[in-house]
Length: 94
Length: 94
DNA sequence: TAATTTGGTTTATAAAATAAACTTGTTTAC
DNA sequence: GTAAACAAGTTTATTTTATAAACCAAATTA
Image 1 (cartoon, each protein chain N blue to C red):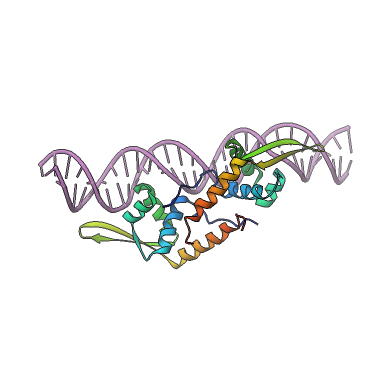
Image 2: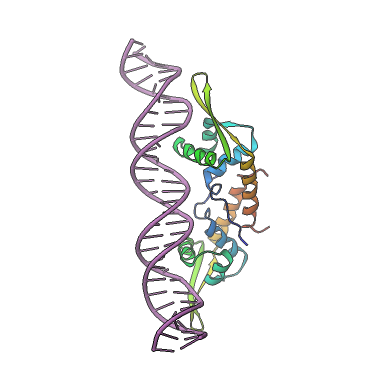
């Protein structure tokens, strides 16, 4: 009756990150930080978890002289996100 | 942009319990256990938390000789549930 | 050149979820 | 009638998570 919710996505911050990444081609650390309002430490940890599950890719480079971390959602991530949304729907009337 | 999700409802089991209670007049412990598939210990703990927040009421009585715990959603609980659903919607496209 | 800011990571702490063990009483099988 | 199994939970312990605090290196600003 109640499908299991992917614990990796059932986290406020990771869900917000995935929600952003699902809608754009890529987003960098700073952007994700501003949009989510998360602390850098928390965001760093959660990004690592999403990357470890291959839900996103993380690319480290430089923008001029400053480091720049760019995240992208993977096909696995898109599928997991969609499944999570579908599962969640079962928890609510209509 | 991403509204805070009520941490009391952002829990798989508590959400399932609230989802059930939102749709019925009352439900007893055993019914909730069967519908959610949760262990009794976990359900007991989560019910306590919902009751402590006044999201549900818990009434202990007997059905014949056997103990029977009946749960009901409160107006506070209904409002919190609705707000959670609304907040969650902001995390998804459309 | 000293202080501050940027862009993070690592480590420590607090909170949550979950499982395991236990309790109290009831029913069933011998 | 009594031992074993079951019902309905609760309590306690363990594991996992989330979050915050501290830290680091390089760049920028005063």
